[in-house]
Length: 419
Ligand code: EPZ
Image 1: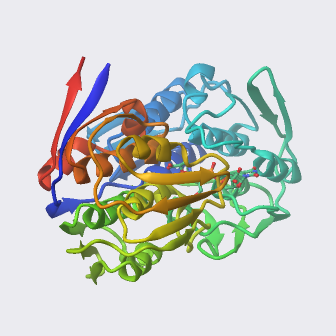
Image 2: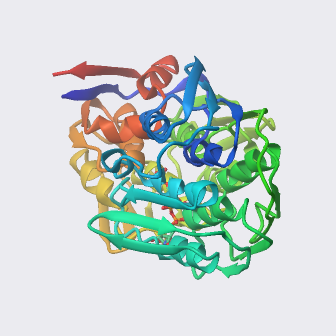
């Protein structure tokens, strides 16, 4: 078993470079199934979700060459099966993108029910609604999803809920459909724009990604033969911004798109931190105890749920009592119990948590319940006095590239230990 051992407190200082976005990359990889040929994808984060995605694609018949640890050349001209390995697809959430992509490419797919972080109920009814409106039959039984279609036909699709996954999945299934699909009430996250940009680079005709109406004119085929670089990770950048505030540090966060970070910047300024926006890098520093705040997580451009636990660490150390309302997931406050073991005073009731700020946290053994909870505990351990041991690292490794190396490079005393 592995654990991270963090000794604090350390104000994080220096420069850190952001990797490619996990939630864009895990959609772009299945999107290569739409290409009848070869393409190169660069700036892939070196994380376990990407490795599993690549293995699934290989099992479907794709040929992958690793150019370096962040770049692959993938040939999807010979897809040999429509059965994705059930054990792998049920390991992570984004395996559901195989459905949209394979429906387009082969008209058929069988995958395991998607896994991923346990954040409460994670229905996929909006994905299924989209596939069915485009003309597919979808059945869910015995932990498997089976979808089949003769020829998908474009149509208007109104999303009953703003969903990142359903928006991308419908985009994937509509790219090669006959006619035009219009997704109304679409999600607007940067990774949606990135997937659309990737598909357009390969020959798709998608307009409006990044707004709540996306128009997809179906094309005959995607030509491939192009290179695409994944957008920088908004959530990893936000994680380091909040780490700078929580540890009263000073970080220059490089290779990010600061436009994607506006909701985080606004909250950091509101609680008394400092932000300098340089366009493709952002400096965040804080030399005093942050002020209390009220946060509500919302779809983009609102405050992201994927930074809620990291913000929770900041607010657990703030002056006064703060409130977070988690409006996306039913069960994303599991990390608060771990922070309380470190001396925080947090009361979580359903989708709201109250943070009575304390002056300091102290090290303790803690368990990461999901990916972003794990990142929050790394920040908390760095800010806390004494030694924190963080367990369940498989969650963190799914989405953060070399987390301990990046934290060490900005001054944290952090080691990965195999017991
Ligand atoms: C994506 O999950 C991200 N994962 C999540 O990041 C992120 O928290 C979430 O979007 C919200 O931003 C990936 O991109 C792989 P949704 P997704 O569909 O697509 C409800 C992380 O830490 N809903 O936007 O699964 C759903 O229950 C992870 O990186 C339906 O009701 O999220 C939720 O309340 C965790 N029916 C809301 O919509 C559906 O068919 C938003 O979910 C789909 C979703």
